[in-house]
Length: 70
Image (cartoon, rainbow, N blue to C red; front, side, top):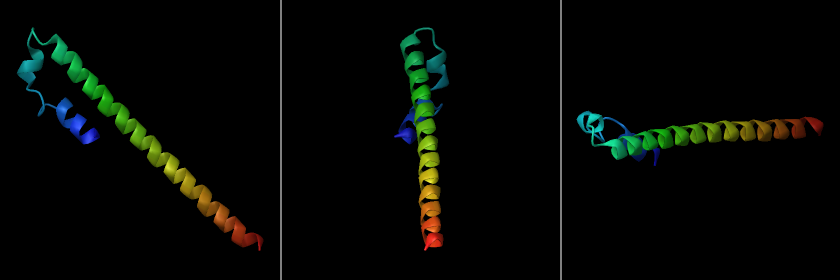
């Protein structure tokens, strides 16, 4: 989904001339919203990666500690 939003928010999705036009206030706001949404999705993705990494480390540590206790 972030890829689709990225393309829509990029210069490929909307021509620069259209965004710079005086009559395109709605389009400018929509474009900015897509940029923000893409950014937020990337932040969520990065946060999830970090959480998964932390859970993995906790599992490995717990397993290692369990073996050492026996």
